[in-house]
Image 1 (spheres, protein in one colour):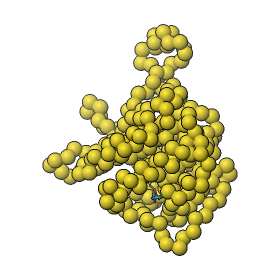
Image 2 (image 1 turned 60 degrees about the horizontal axis):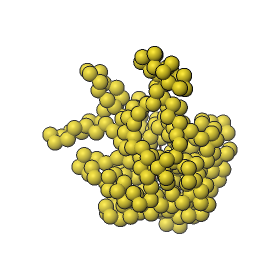
Image 3 (image 1 turned 45 degrees about the vertical axis):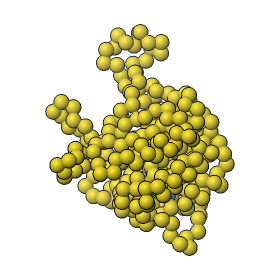
Length: 270
Ligand SMILES: C[S@@+](CC[C@H](N)C(=O)[O-])C[C@H]1O[C@@H](n2cnc3c(N)ncnc32)[C@H](O)[C@@H]1O
């Protein structure tokens, strides 16, 4: 929740802009059709302990709140833009992401539904970090959702920018593009880096790896995009945008996380 008597403020770092404020208000001040891409991970309403935001709204309040913010995202998104929305449920609270998507149906096309896999076992070999669930009912949760939402459902994307090399190289000649790349598909394995301390994840409980927004930017495919993250957190989307050559606008309600995002961007020697 937004702290009382904390006025919104904004500042630039290189090509990027950071706004300390409530995105439900700040987004309204952004012109329509402004952004090429929005990449964001809102709070999941799972009682996660943030520095100040309280992640425990009543379910209907949460859904109404987030749907209203998503409709503002639609307004600021170009007609040929992409919204990548990362969200997850929990074992005991699994419906929420689906409830959200059903409500977003009147605003967006669900152009791609990507599964973000954080850890996986292939045959007997495990990759990534497993977050154990102690339970005799539930299996470990190793995935989150990455919904690719667009206004028309037919936004052109660049699948091969995130493609993978063919196993059978004879495929290269058979394809018109003549590249050793095929579409990766809708299951993306993106593990977290191994960290020893919470400070290496910026003492924030819900960051995503930089590779996730980087892959979204490549998949959308536009050069030098204008990218917005309305729930900026520690600024991962802005860091990825910078590395990709785009301009970012990040909105975050908590000044502590704004400071972290600012330091991350400044450390890129802007
Ligand atoms: C899941 S985290 C995003 C983490 C980010 N992807 C990263 O890698 O650091 C959600 C963030 O939204 C912020 N937040 C919550 N309500 C907000 C609001 N109304 N406006 C802007 N930010 C908000 C929280 O403080 C939290 O940092």
